[in-house]
Image (cartoon, rainbow, N blue to C red):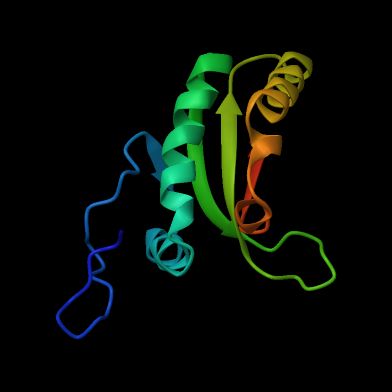
Length: 116
């Protein structure tokens, strides 16, 4: 749960379970997770699941505007790997089958996992 001040506003430098992630535009990413708090647990599990499947990777979190009818911003988790592209795509498919496709719609509509 995000830390808040006594007035209910989010504390910008509150601790997060985001060790192991590179974060682009951290203020926006934190604000998005505050607005969608279920993502914090999903990100922790994603890190673990990705580590079980990929090798030679870094994880980048950033905000993006995927192509969609509503163009709503989403959190993007980019798996940046040194693996050959074809192998990395197969591993991403493995992640989908093993875990990601079982996530609730409330998570899927707020987070995209992709290759960097």
